[in-house]
Length: 145
Image (cartoon, rainbow, N blue to C red; front, top):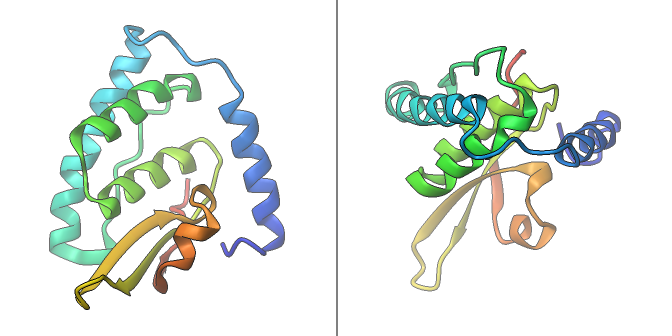
């Protein structure tokens, strides 16, 4: 959904409300479960992206993982260093499971050496400055929850 889409503001408000909620302690069982899901989702998504490209589907997180367990998701995403596309797909799936339907955007630009550089991001979670550095070439809608 493009940032100027009428539902986009509602989605951003819902995301902001979720982010304002407390986070569970790091050693909480649900945080650990969220971390395990994220690790598996990255590995599965990596294989699926190689096999089917943008049509890759990320496995849904278990329904019992509350938003408050996001520390496990964010922790694994920051430590495993997935590609920007893998990270965006997995984070998009996590958000979608919690009612936030943001799109993944893929863009390209020329770097200082003239080579083409690609980048993927979640539209609403990226600054306008960063988005402006790339020419959008593809959007991946949020998966059906």
